[in-house]
Image (cartoon, rainbow, N blue to C red):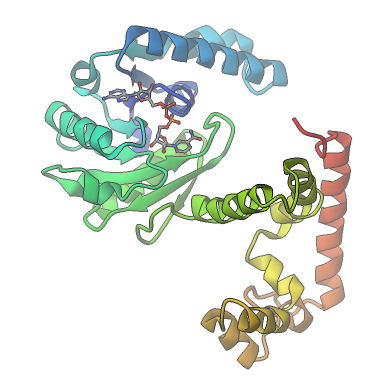
Length: 313
Ligand SMILES: NC(=O)c1ccc[n+]([C@@H]2O[C@H](COP(=O)([O-])OP(=O)(O)OC[C@H]3O[C@@H](n4cnc5c(N)ncnc54)[C@H](O)[C@@H]3O)[C@@H](O)[C@H]2O)c1
C-alpha cells in the first residue's frame, strides 16, 4: 500500500505516548481509533489531546478553527477488535511489559486485515522474540519520542523477518504525517537514542548517588556545554572537532583501542585539522570549518540565553 492512501489507523494504548501519537495522525487528516482498556482512560487521553492542540494553537502551529475537526478524527474506544478491523496501519503503544505486548499482538493479528503493518513503540524490549504472530513479516518497530506531537524523530526498525515493503511503507507513512523517520539497518535493543540516553542517565545517577555532584549541578553542566554543542555537531561529528588522534589516545588508555577510530588515525584522517576524519569536509580549510561551527554555536548560545533555558523548567 502507498502511504498516501492511508485513510484510517489505530493506536493501541492511550497513555503518555498513545494519545499524542493519535493526535499526530489526526492532525495529518487520518481517522484514528484510539484504544485502551477503560472508558475513563480514553476520555482522559482525549482531554490531553485537546490541551496539546490548544498549546500548539497558542504557539501558532495549529489553526484553532481546525481543532474540532482534528478531535473529531480521533475515535476513542475500548473495543480493540472492532477498532482495528478496517484500518490501514496499527501503532501499538501499550505498557512495556512482555506479556501485555504478546497478548495485544495476538489480538491484533486475529482481528485486523492480513496486509496491515503492525508497528510497536517498544523502547527496549526484543519485541520480535516476545510476540508470537503467524506472519512476522508485517511486524516492525516505529519508536516515537515524547512528546510525539512535537519531537520529529521516529526510529523505524526491522526485525529479522520484517518485509522490506513494510519497512519502507512505515517510514513513508511517518514522513507523510510530518515525522522524520530514521530507518535502521537492523534491530538492536534500545535502537540509537535510548542507547545513548541510557549511558548518560546511568552516569548521571551514579554521580548523584555517590554524592559527587548534585542534580542541579549535573543539569547545569550539561546544559551549558553539551546542550549547546549537540544540536550543531551531534555526538559523532564532535569527535572530528576534538581530533581523532586525541580520541585514539584517550580510548587506548580507558576503554581500549577502537578500530573505527584507529583506522582513520592510521590513514592520517584526524578530523577538521586534516579536512577529513569521520566526516569529509570536502577540502575546506580548518578556519572555514571552525568559523561555520562557531557562528552556529554563537546563535545557539544567544537563543538559549534569550529563553533563559539554563534555568530549570
Ligand atoms: N513514555 C515515554 O516517554 C516513551 C517514549 C518512547 C516509547 N515509549 C514506549 O511506548 C509504550 C507505551 O508507553 P507509555 O509511556 O505511553 O505507557 P503508559 O503506561 O502511559 O500507557 C500505556 C497504556 O496502554 C494501556 N494498555 C495496557 N494494556 C492494554 C491493552 N491490552 N489494550 C489496550 N490498551 C492497553 C494502558 O491502560 C495505558 O493507558 C511502551 O512500550 C514504552 O516503552 C514510551
